[in-house]
Length: 309
Image (cartoon, rainbow, N blue to C red; front, side, top):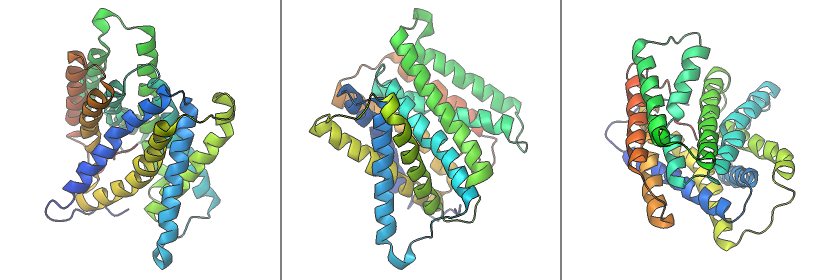
């Protein structure tokens, strides 16, 4: 993928739209799980509809369509990335939202760059933990404690849901590090790699969903079904393509900051559409998490931490 900034601010509309799409995904997940859709099935439908949307775009591209990789090693790396970037975290976020609000899940998503930095700093030999980065990570961790409100105790359900979301962002962090080292640098088209990734994620979830999701899924109702289609086709499939355009127009450094904007959308939409409560510690802790990320990343090289979903 080419990382070249275009002059002006032509990337801004796409950036705002992308943040709104990804911010609204937490509301869509909440509607689905509240309707009784098992978390693993939420993840499966998300990947399936996302993959179908990208395959449709690929087929409509005609002669301009990129070739799908056939190298077995690329397929192997795609399977690992699919598990770390899609299958596992999508399931964990959906499970988390069976216990916590979409507002809180959106805030936890903002810890993704912190998790990514942890893996980048300690698993990539070329990167070294500097005092600035460690201080930023500590500030982000303090923000996590504030969001949880540890001084007043944490209910079992809230703790379980929050830990699931944090495990999801940890998967994102591991997935980004693996992607950077083994997957994104390949000569294949970025869009073709994403298609392969979501296809493998769908296949992986097809294997485990009947076991973890209690057999075949039932009809959740028209609204939850529509939310799942939107979550997959738009919030996953088309959003990946839009994210590529933003990266190419503004550079991956600017594109990665979409992670800081999505909690604003998830908070507003969760409060307005689902009447979810918003505590002061959620706002203050989320701000501290973002401040820690910004401080830790201020010394990173261009494009070091990209936006992942």
